[in-house]
Amino acid sequence: MLPGHYVCTSCGTKFPFEFYRAIYYLGSGEIGDHVPDEELLAVPLRPAWCKDCGRVCPVEDIAPLRTFEAAYAAVRSGLSFDYPFSSKYGDPADHRREVAVYLRWRMGRRRAARALCCGGSNFQFMDVPTPLFKHAECEFGVIEPVEVIPGPGVWRPGISGPANTRLYSAEGDLIGRITWLHLTEHQRTWSVEKLSYPAATGE
View 1 (cartoon, helix red, strand yellow):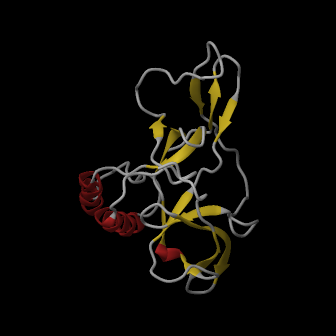
View 2 (view 1 turned 90 degrees about the vertical axis):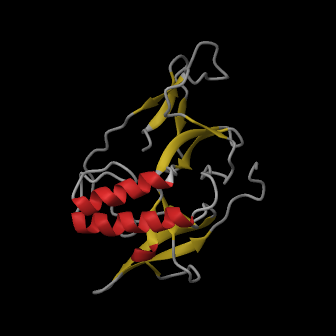
């Protein structure tokens, strides 16, 4: 889960995230104008400081396999769980299907978590109970999270405007950007623009 942004407690410098949502593509076909909704999976995210990019960045939150197995056991027993998403909201039948997809994805995942701004692994998580995160350019400041409560809105990604959500392979490679949603009687599909990490990933 990502906070709204980070801020220096002394100088007030704001450290925003470039994006707050990312999606895995689990399909085997070529991405293009009609990627089915069922081949997409939300990326669990944690906030981190990317040392290569010099900024806050969403990083894949990849828990041990046993955590996914515990969520699958919980959803099958009608119990609550908080990872890889919260069971507080939504339909239990949908939860069961989605947790099963997460479990299959985790069983096949080989790479360690990656910073999704550049694909690198040179980062420091910012949501752990460690010493304060010092703002290097400020003598007294530390960087702390700021929670932002979203107000009511009618924004519908892909309909009101392009969703512009980053799309990643199952191994965390940046492969595209989801833009427009296409609705038919039986299926939801997305247009995807191809995209990739910069040539140098810092790894």
